Length: 460
Ligand code: GLU
Image 1 (cartoon, rainbow, N blue to C red):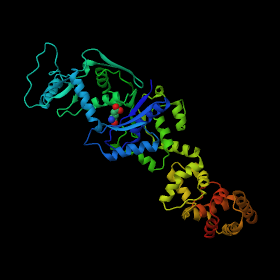
Image 2 (image 1 turned 135 degrees about the horizontal axis):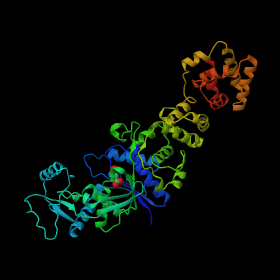
Image 3 (image 1 turned 180 degrees about the vertical axis):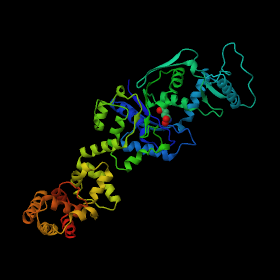
Image 4 (image 1 turned 90 degrees about the vertical axis):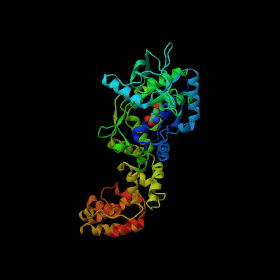
């Protein structure tokens, strides 16, 4: 069986990390099985759907490298197909018209609630052998209801939740087409999953109540349902369901804040799936390891500090030249023109950075003006070291410009002045980099431009 998975977002809000995890797992499963990953945009809620939300989905997936093999398909463009299947179900007697008005449905619900029963459609218009249906009211367009099986259970082996069994008598006859003929959500999903030959439905567990209804429609149409895996919710740091309403950022926000796509993939992978105790892994490693047997059963909680840490680990491990490529546009945005030194600079400072923005801040010090931190300057740039600083500035005017030669020049000044390394190194760092907290001084100076270093030292 060739694996076919799908991600089926509704573009009703900007997609956040919790949502896009439901794209990551089906993508990873398809990739790890040599299968096909499909993107389907469920845009039938016209009032709440927007093109901007679609764009964030497409951009976010592209950034994270979750490329679909097929799609995006848009449900609004498939209406004719749904109507054809509605017709087919009518022809086969799988559905029936129901003329119950909204007022009658409300009255029914109230009566059931008063009797402490679960509110559900009572089958008034369901045709049965020997049953006389009420007279069809005039001028009323009916909805179409699916003849849910009577008796028995619907069961499936959920890859996350285990076996789930629902009695058919719990499920009332679902409306599959509204009075104006438009198909309803649960019905469209089934038609799509059939037409797209989906083998594994991996989605959020907010859909678990839809699944038994969908399974019955699959079977009525003559298809066996796919394998289901219902992922537990992602909670925010306050322990609430992650959502735009309580501050979840759009996925693309993380790109703009300087996170690496591979780090976000790694972080999201761990947010609901595990491979032993492994925390940091590459995309390739993830695809080798991923399966549906190690999906977590309990809700995962988003942790911003952990995401930053994962990002810092990926930055540290990343090739300097590749990192430089990502930082380059950020520097340009700031009006800084980088040069061939950038990979070396990235290599020097990357283990102090947890996002690309922080890395760009550091890199910028090698290209643009720096303002020495006032407190540090007052503390380290004292009259006692000024002669040593100007001696160093003089030597560096003509010194060979390598880390080793610069290191020697510093030692020469220490020997000549009797100062200790930190007494000279701290003020030089503050003057050249703006702060005393820098990587090793000889390396920092070697990665800086001679004229700039000499000029900054002269400001002491
Ligand atoms: N469109 C649904 C959602 O965004 C997903 C439906 C599905 O995966 O079956 O929640």
